[in-house]
Length: 335
Ligand code: NAD
Ligand code: UD1
Image 1 (cartoon, rainbow, N blue to C red):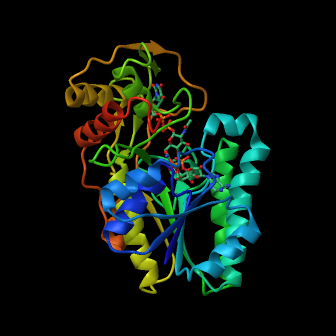
Image 2: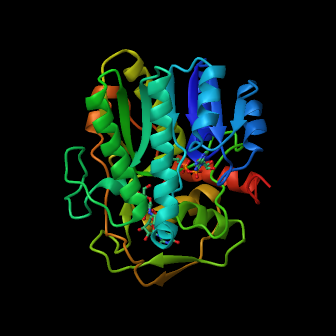
């Protein structure tokens, strides 16, 4: 049995579907602080499997113990975390408590119950922004936000845990920018309130919820002056988790990899691809640079290819098509 924490969230739900399609027995947990219970019906509609789900907080040690008593859990994929970078600056303690508390309680209960296999959601945000691009796994780390620090500190905690208990094997997966949605249009990204991230903002402009996109800066040192990122289809990302799980379960030890496409696209590249895929115009205005942004980053994805035999398959157009299908079939997300 595989346990997914943060299972009803954006990446968790897509990973859940891929695991069920691959024949895994899965139990999901989530406290629904940033996701919707309706995800469960959608997962069932896609996979024809009724998902096993328990609503609980991953920081609740007693609830975790009961869960491990109820199911014989072989491995955990840990997504549960708060992820809004800006909010983490204003509410740092909430982020440290939730994200570090979650990993602490989880790994403590795992140790107690002899479950030593963990896939951990890390982020490209752990790389020092002064690194040259593409980012490679061995490059210097650093962070500019409490959110980023929770990921860096979690990585460190897990490394120390591995040293103290060599039974543990951990996959540290550093995601770049996940966008897109399942091809069915049944599950996708459903942000609360005004989206902070580019793709959900674009889809909400396309559906008429927002008048225009603000592009943060047109004077970056990039090919067209707008920020460059490594956008990766969420289904490719989910499949990377399956590869990582198989790697750990085959007893090869721990692994640290970037999950990205290895290609950078600008904001304007994404807008153009989206307009083509959706056949809609995206009105935009240039606005000042967003505090904390950098010009460009993308992954070196060679290690994931070599060690996990994984590479992203979907291109930018497909990411836009799937994001648009999700948004147009669900103008109000899951509501
Ligand atoms: P998401 O918010 O959609 O999913 C996270 C889920 O965790 C939510 O359903 C939320 O309700 C749940 N959760 C949060 N705290 C919890 C707690 N204490 N107990 C139980 N459930 C809790 O986010 P996502 O985009 O699916 O991200 C998944 C993971 O990937 C997170 O750890 C995030 O930091 C990491 N990540 C995301 C991105 C991205 O751009 N989406 C990039 C890099 C890393
Ligand atoms: C986000 C996260 C970061 C994480 C990374 C990869 C934030 C603030 N940061 O950053 O922690 O590591 O994803 O998952 O959430 N843009 C606009 N207009 C908008 C929104 C964005 O022009 O309305 C631009 C940004 O300036 C940037 C690009 O679009 O150049 C992508 O932005 P975004 O989707 O927020 O991702 P990141 O900034 O990479």
